[in-house]
Every structure is written in C-alpha cells, then in structure tokens.
Length: 253
Image (cartoon, rainbow, N blue to C red):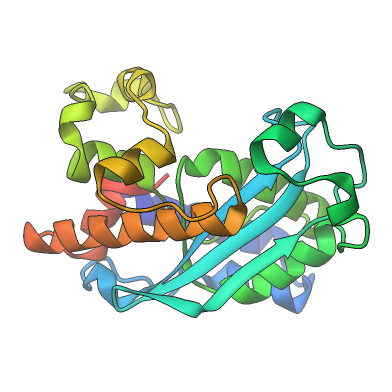
C-alpha cells in the first residue's frame, strides 16, 4: 500500500468521524490537503511549506513551542518574501538550558500570542501545501499536540522529512545502507542505522555548501532546510525520478 494511499485512507476515516461537525475554517482547509495530490506529476509542480520550530525543551510531551519559522517553495524556488516568523508565548518558564541554544528569553515572548493563536496563523499560511521539515517527526509532534488540543485532530498535510532525503540522495556515503527488508522496521519506526549516523542540520548544510543564517532560530533553520530540500528536488530530477511519488518514496513520513 503506497504512502499517499495510506494517508488518504486515514484522512477519509477522520473526515467520516468528524461528519457534519464543522471545524474552524482555518483547520478545515487542511482536511482536504491530500485531495489534489497526483503522484505521477512532477514534484516541483506542487507547493511546499518548509517549517522549523524552537521549543522550551526536547520533551515532546511537556515542552512547548517558542517560535515557528517557515518559507514557501514552489516551482523549485524559495519565496523569501513569503516568510512566516512568529514567537510564541509558551505560558510557562523557559529553562536556562534551552535559552543557551536558541537565545529566546522570557522577555521576548511575554507579549507574544499564545500557541493556539499562532497555530491558526500558521495553518492559514500552510493551507494545502506539502509540509517539509528536517527531522520532521520532532516538529510534527509539537504541532500535532497543539493541533489536537485546539482543533481535535492532527495535521493532514503530506509531510516530507529532509533527513532521509539527505541519507539517500545528497550524502549517502555518510549513512549506512538501509536494510534490504526495511518493512521489518514497522510503520513509523526510525531506522537505527540512519539514527546512528544522523548529522545535524548545520553539519549537513556545511557539507552541501549551504550557509546557515541565524542557526537555532526557527526562521534561520527553516531557510537552511528549504535550501537542502531544493537541492534534493533537483537531484531527483537529475536522476529521472522527479515525480511526486518518487519524492514520497524517499522522504514521506
């Protein structure tokens, strides 16, 4: 069963469960994000939102989002003028250990909007785009927890992770080969070999000759991720595998 087919199957189940209940319009848009995706079309014909978040910590159950940054990528080009950059008031203290990483201090978020308000602004920005992130399960876990609490269901947009794109397309020599029977890992599992050899966003960008502006800021890391993704799309096309289903086969989660 293909990943797009599977995503659509669970999306249909969700829509049946919601039934006649009308979610907030900004959340309802995403319920139809998979409808117009045609795997046989070139991947560059679709619109992508490349996102990164900064958080109060790494605990996906207890930590909170502090900042969301994102860029649009369409027709293979990054649209710098359509940037999303928003601080978030987490409603709790920010541990000093996390401040040393991202530099966001309490005074910077005191007057910032809370998570639900920023989420809705981001949903409006995201629309029906394909979502892209580096180590996407981390970002998606935080966004979906907030989405679930605010609207009662997770994001439905197709999501691409740039980590397997790097491991398969851009920097394969840095990663051990995937097992021949990858399905044995189970649905949603992380390949242990890939995990052991995972490089940071900064290391990957450096190896690809991409300069990271404002490292460990959501908008800076989102831009670096967008440039990495742009490189991966070009590599797929160069290999004659530039269709959406080829991209999904390598990087969808």
